[in-house]
Amino acid sequence: MSVLQIIFLVTGFVTLLAGVMVVASPKLVHAALWLIVSLAGVAVLFVLLNANFLAVVQVVVYIGAIAILIIFTVMLTRRVMADSGPTHNRTWWVALLSAVVLLGGLLALIWQHPAFQAVPAELAAADTSLTVLGTSLVDVNRYLVPFEVASVLLLAALIGAIAVARPVAKGEEADE
Amino acid sequence: MGDPFGLIGRWFMDLLTGWGMESSAALTLLRFLGAGVMAIVLLFACFFLIVAERKMLGRFQDRYGPNRIGPFGIFQTIADFVKLIGKEIVVPAGIDKPLYWLAPLLVVMSIIGMWAVVPLAPGFRGTDLNVGVLYLVSVGAIGTLGIIMAGWSSNNKFAMLGAFRAVAQLVSYEIPMVLMLLVPTMLSGTMGVVGIVEAQSEMWFIVAAPLAALVYLISSIAENGRAPFDLTEGESEIVAGFNVEYGGLAFGMFYVGDFLHAFTVGALFSTLFLGGWRGPGAEQYPLLGLFYFFLKTIAVWFVTVWIRGSFPRVRIDQLLALNWKFLTPLALLIVAVTAVVNKLAVEQGWSRILALLAANVVMAAGVWGALALHGRTVRRREEELRAGAAVSASAAR
Image (cartoon, rainbow over all chains, first blue to last red):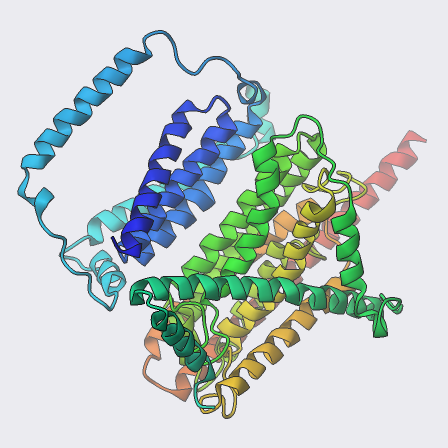
């Protein structure tokens, strides 16, 4: 077993464990922080796959922006933060059973797919994935239209957020 | 003396494989060792950085600064360190223990992590990541996380308020900083930090993009949370800040993170805009490159300390207004103009740099004019308000 495989196994285990802790930990802030551990684990997996760009974007977007937003929201809701009720009820074993059955079914299905047992292709020494990613986002024949649509959607969301957050003007306030 | 850093690496590699270690395992171990050595050297450098900064601040404020322990007071930090170690570890009631102890480590880690992609000399660097610039942003985000964790886990409302304030500042100023990181990326055509240094062979980027360099420096100082943007701490408002419940070495870690961050800002600025290790003869003698790199870094660091010692503190509303109403729109403008000019004048050699410089001068003139107009409007409005207040006061009388 090579060093990379050991790193992969450890990271995978930590990622899964953190994922379980997200739903199992009673404190919401802890759940949010476990979510960060889980996302960081996925970033490490991206690094092991030589996808540096995706790894870094994973950290920037999910840990730097989304997770901080989640933590902020959780911290601002005082009551929920102190919640200390039980995390599961009496029927937990039914959920476990159905989850295991579902996992088994999915595994059995995936096992039959030829790609599952294929040996992964050797990764290229030079990382060209970033260039390919960049050019295909501005290529008319590939992902230009979805890319632009997503940009317009985000811009609309931005303007909408500003419109919602704007203080009510004096004249409008008198109408209410 | 051709390649001293490669030589050391090869020597260690031979030593480890000579002990019968597998070459891939030896390489992994070597990387971990390198990272460890880098972190330890940086932390030890803090002893020097802190005392140097305090000395400089003292001189700026017309006093001596630390001068009791050792010649010129250079062992002051060591004495402080011993004092911090000797302190009782006070654990406040009701804290969230794991987060409380993890937070200072995360803050320091995020700053040391930035050094992984900075090329210190030709062939001497942690790693040549092809997304190095983005990596710098992502590592910086972890520091923000550490500050939130510190503020929340302390179970103190002042720490919480300080953390909210700190995060509002850090997240806001990240925007112009990230936008300005795009400028060296566009000019060099790569996101790798090593490639950015390579691309500055004919001219430093500060000549082609002076406005971008200025905005980057301002937002970096704000990211660092020091004067004039030292709103993360406010003795008269929120007791201390997000670190109010920390004591001893845990508080010292935040302190170390702050001072190391200032030096890191200098290193990043000199790498991105001042050509990093580039200088006469640096390619032949990598040690000379190391010297140039630290010379530039210390120069930029000196300027940030100078700013810290000279400018008055801003208010929180001024801080956020400066970012959202001035720096962010300006950064967007700079990115757009630089992209267009760079594309039009590509493959032109020197005239490309001149065209970029001219575009920057035009932008600077426009910004100056807009600021002058805005200032006049604000002053007139204040004058009217004052006159109105005087009239109503006399009427009431």
